[in-house]
Amino acid sequence: MELNEAQYFGGTPIDGYGPGFFRIGGEVHEGALLLLPSGLGEWAGFEAAPIVAAADQIDIVLIGTGPEMSYHLPPEFRAAIEGAGIGIEVMASPQACRTYNVLLGEGRRAGAALLPA
Image (tube, rainbow, N blue to C red; front, side):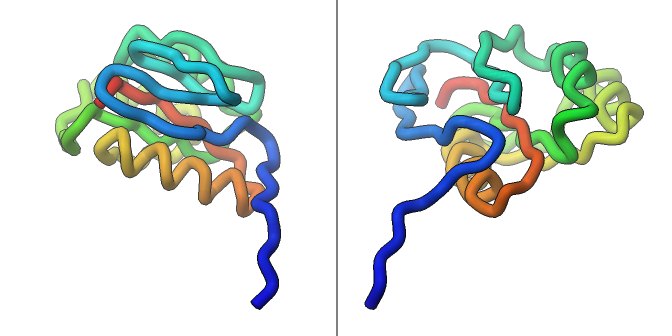
């Protein structure tokens, strides 16, 4: 069996997560985060403007809704993102972290907006 180190394109992978925090690039970040190819930043939670501004960088955004999945995104939030031509996938934050890393490894143009678990 041959093992290869994972390579990530267009972003920094999520190293880990836990109650109230995410570890990215070896640093612990508390609270809600927005990960885009242009970098990492705080996210006010269901704020569409910074995601829409990245429409030329991403094709899909993963919305991590905390410890459990919530199907109920604010309608204006969903409409703004979809109106910018960005696909949305909603899931619990732990699953969003893992999926984000997989998409980066595939070279996909992805972003993640994560509420802490």
